[in-house]
Image (cartoon, rainbow, N blue to C red; front, side, top):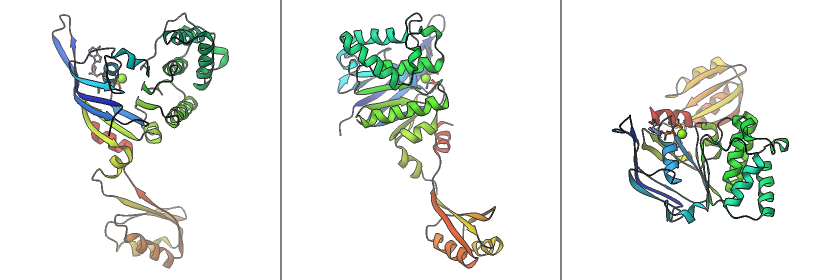
Length: 312
Ligand SMILES: Nc1ncnc2c1ncn2[C@@H]1O[C@H](COP(=O)(O)OP(=O)(O)OP(=O)(O)O)[C@@H](O)[C@H]1O
Ligand SMILES: [Mg+2]
């Protein structure tokens, strides 16, 4: 298997203090691989080292030790950087440029002719949902969410093979978040690999194939999101929802099933069982009590529970 991003034993110490004598280890021996064509979620609490990793990959700072390759090239290879895109954590641009001018500027950096610059600018500013009336407004007058959108548009101007997004949802309102989520999903459809850090776990659950979780600069967990949530040694259980029926009778029959939990609700009940074979027993008891089945669902731990366990 070949990987599109290969991170090998990456460490970073920041030198702090007046004499730069004190060292803060921000990243500690990180090894991580990412396959092409997926949305990869890069998670971790505040200060876990996500931005540091992304900045090293973007060659904006040097690692203390370790190496990384993107698209098969060392991260110091500038040719490779023209094939990827990057939207920083807090996009900050020249205040007095207008959105259109900024896009035009980045288009020029990539050597596009005027027609292509115009076409890409209009296509991308529309795509990120920036209102057309704001295209000719100076960026200093933009809100955080509007800047975030321009940052995203800018990161896509060269039709990158991989795009690195550091907290792409920050500053966006709920509708904006949904739009950007759709945009990210669309990128994957087109074959672009997305490497994104975010704290918004619902976005990760909705979008990501594989994830890595950092804790204190170290890798705490990595793998397929679905597998991580189901195979983490947690006991699998099943939630059975029923309606109608005499709750008291049902409760009594279920009391005989080991580990089963009964919770009455208006006009029905939720019953939790640990063993798949117990589902049939509950259904039998439900029918006896005159009730009917609404649903049976496997219960897996939420990403939030998993995340808290990994980062605590
Ligand atoms: N320029 C810097 N100088 C000194 N220390 C730094 C610098 N930048 C980051 N750090 C430290 O490195 C560690 C990792 O920071 P980083 O910004 O990579 O975290 P993060 O995972 O992106 O966090 P967040 O979720 O808050 O964005 C933190 O302890 C932080 O204090
Ligand atoms: Mg960060």
